[in-house]
Amino acid sequence: MTTNKRFVKAICFLSVMMTINLSFAQSVTTLNQQDTGYRGIWYSNEPSDDEFVYKYSGGLATYPANHYPFSVYSKKVNKTFFCYGGADPDGNTLYHMISYFDHTTGQVPRPTIVLDKQTDNAHDNPVMNIDKEGYIWLFSTANGTLSPSYVHKSKRPYDISEFEQVFADKIENGEAVEMDNFSYLQSWYQPKKGFINLFTHYQTGVIPDQPEKPRRTIGFMTSRDGEHYSSWKDIAAIEEGHYQTSGQSGKILGTSFNFHPYREEGNGLNFRTNLYYLQTADFGKSWTNAKGQKIEIPLRASQNEALVKDYRAEGLLVYINDLEYDGEDRPVILYLTTKGYEAGPENGPRNWFTARFTGEEWEILPVTSSDNNYDMGSLYIDEQGIWRIIGPTASGPQKFNTGGEMVLWTSLDQGKTWSSKQLTQKSRYNHSYARKPVYVNEDFYAFWADGHGREKSVSNLYFCDRDGNVYLLPAKMEGLFAKPELISAHDDK
Image 1 (cartoon, rainbow, N blue to C red):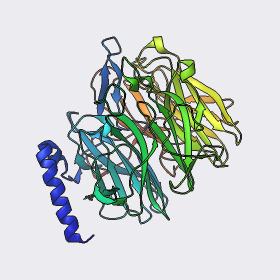
Image 2: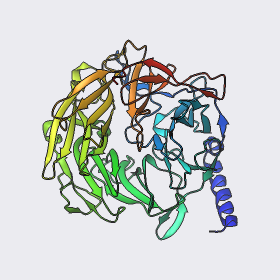
Image 3: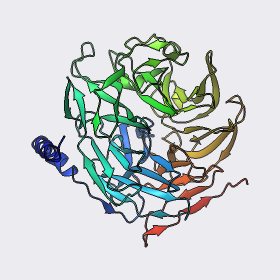
Image 4: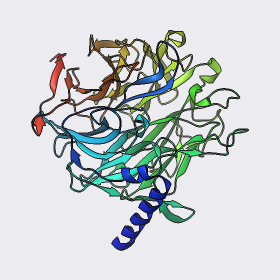
């Protein structure tokens, strides 16, 4: 496509968006502004009319588990680049932010505001990736079909100062069309092939007796250059849909997902259950279960060969946190189960499990328990075979609300036994959504935010190293660079 044709296409797209909604057209503007510090977005969902106030809420700058990655380490420049859902000083609008931690200097720069998403919905948080030439890609997701999605690319390799919008397209009915809406994006990159991105799209008219209700259909798309994408291919479309969480090891890309059953009353999305797993080793051309049995996608029945465990039969809900691979490229899924979607002690305990494929079967073992369905953590398996989990499994100041105090869990025997070390204590707000970087470096091991669990508050951003030392990113910077503040020391060296 020539430059002139791309320019015309971009102008046409902007014109269409202006006729739909002026605020959306305004949000297309790429800001490229330096901020004065690090502030996360506070967000709440589904008021509950009880002492816990919301189904979930808090500092959700690195939410949800179905967005990935928020951070990528680059050995070439010795920096961990990270993005997050930021906020204006009043916390009223979602900024798509990007920055980095310089492992050589131990400093962070002022973060860059790439764009104002013009919402306070943390479902619209960005994710990022870095291609083989060092260009940084920022994918701005949407929550459903009522707002647009965007793609941005850094103008220079390994440089966060300036981004330009990429007017991406996809193949639909054999022709290239604008790709301006996707949800729950998980971006993976393979240097010889390009991007393979997993996502959710919304389909109406497919749920019996509820033609206006959308189904969350999970799928994937591929692109060699990040701008021109394949047609969307569905992975699963069972009943009311799915949430998926993915992982990659070399050529193997896997996805773990649950499903939302049809319900005559109530929101089926609040009754997510079952645990499934699929993988591809050929960039999405074919899919298998963990045993290597070929699976035709999309899956359409709840009982299928991708099923890891039938939790529907046990009356339990399933919330998936992470997917990792061991030294033999076998999947390990981190998830929790609960008796109901509402916050509070009645639906507890929220039990954490790992499901490890042994080569013959899935071995499911308990880890711990916590007090909220949205207590999300990340799973790590290093070259020595040591398993680690970082997550808010200790109760925080707003008990039974999202998050809590961060804990580092360690297992030397593939999840059979665990030891723990609490990383944060006596916090003012709950910590939540500890996220693992791609190509993780031990000095920037997990990245998360805090926030009040029951009322709108400021939200700070943190990271920890592999030993559990916790650092606070500066909310207010006087200079262009600053060293994060060590707030909790746990160095065992």
